[in-house]
Length: 590
Image 1 (tube, one colour):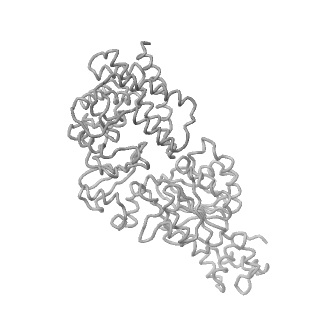
Image 2 (tube, helix red, strand yellow):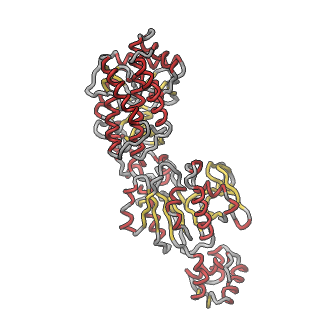
Image 3 (cartoon, rainbow, N blue to C red):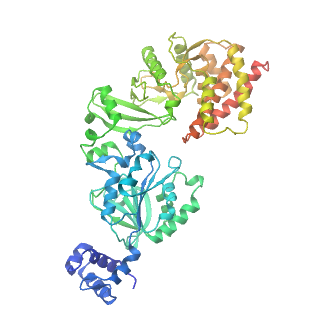
C-alpha cells in the first residue's frame, strides 16, 4: 500500500505520539474526524498500526519519506546587510543571544537530522569551526562571487535526495524541521497587501503552478525548502544541463525551477506570521532584536562611534552603496546627518598607500576640492565621509562638465602643495606586474610586445622633464560628485600623490572613454589654449601609460579572484591605441 497524504499524516503522527485518540489526531493534523477514522482503518488493515501505535511495517511504510539530510547555503556576500557583512558572514550574526546558523543546526538536530552540509564561499574560513562543533560537512563554492546561488546547489548536486535546503541567516521562532516529510515544498507566508516578494499561485492539492515577483493576497516564498527524491532527481538534471551557460550565471536556483515549473511537483507549505524571519537590512533586524546593535561585536560600529561621538543606538538607515572596484561602501545616518562608511577591499593593502591617501585627502579638504572628507584611518584604510544626497556624477561628454573637470585638475596641479607620496604610471604598472607574476607566468598573447613598447614610450616621456605636482591619479567622472547647488567634490584619493601633471589627463581620457576629438578638447580646456605639439604628445603618451597601468591592475585583481569585467578590455584598448599613436608622435610620425 502506498500512503495517501491523509494516511501519511496519521501514521507520522502516531510515530511520534502513540495511543492518541481520534480527536487528538484530528486536532493536530488538521484532518476531519471522518478522514482520521478512514486513515486509521486502512493503516490497521495493512498492519502499519496496532492499538493506535505504529508497527515495524509502519516504519517501513514511512521510510520513503524519511529526510536524508540538510544543506545550508552560506556562500553569499549578503551585500544588503552592509556594513556588518563586510566583517563577517550574515549567518554568523548573534540574534537574540544565538548565532543564526548554529540555532538552525541545533533545530535540525532536534528533528533527528544530523547529516548537514554547509556550502560556503564568502569569508569561508569563518564557518570551518562548525565541523568540530557540530560535525557538519563543509563544501566550498569557489564561484560564489561570479554566479548566483544555483552554483551552491551545483556544488552539492550529488547530495540532493530527501533534503532540506536552508539559508544560513534565517531565524525560526518555532522548529520547522521534521524527520519525515510527505512532499517537496516551499515554505511560505501570506501577504494580504502588496509585496515585492516572490508570490506563488497554486493549483490542485496546493501545487505551485506559477510564480511572480510582486503581488498581493498571495502566499510568498519565505524561508526553507524541502526537496523530495523526485524533485532532487530532476533539479540535479537541470543544474547539470544549464550550469556554465552565460545566461545562467546570475540566476537563482528558484529561477531554474520557475522556468520549468510544469516539470516540477512542489507545493506551498504555509507558516504563520512570525515563525520564519529573514532580515534584509540592519533596521529590520533591529526591529526583531532591539538589543542587536548595542550588543553587536563590530569594529565598524566602534569606528563610527569613535569618530562621530554618537552612540550605537543612533546609527540607522544603513544600506550598501554602489560598490567600487577596490572598496565597499555603505550609507548610514545619525542624529547629526548622513554619512558614508568605506571599508577597504581585500588585497588593497598591497595596492594602496593609505598614509599617502590620508595626506592627500587632508590637502584636498584644505583646498576646498573635497568637502566630503571627515576621517580616514591611515593604517587600516577605513574612512568616514559626508553623504551628498541627490548628487550626480560629472558627464565627461558634456563640454561644460569637461571644462569644470579640467579647471579642477589645473587648480590642483598649481596649488603648490606637496605630499610625501609619489605616483608614476610606469613604476606603478611594474609593481602590479611583479605582484601578478607571483600568481604565475604572464602568457597573454601580445603582452611582451606591448610591454616592450611601453619601455620605449617611458624613455621618451622621461626625456620631456615635465613638471611634477600633486595629482589625483584616479581622475574620472565617477569620482566627481556634483551637488544640487553646483558645488563639486573630487572624492576617492587612494592613488593621489606627486606625479607628472599629465597623469590626471591620461586617466580622464581612459576611464571616461573619450574619443580623440574629445581628448583634444579636454587638453585645450586644461591649458586654456591650444596645446603645443610637445604638450599634446606628452599628454597622449599618458593616456597609453594610464591604460597600461590600469590594465595591469585589472589583471592582478582578476588573478586574486575579483571580477573586473569590461574595464579590463577598456584599459587594454586605450593602452594599445594610444601606445602606437604616442610613439609615432615622438618618432616624428606627426
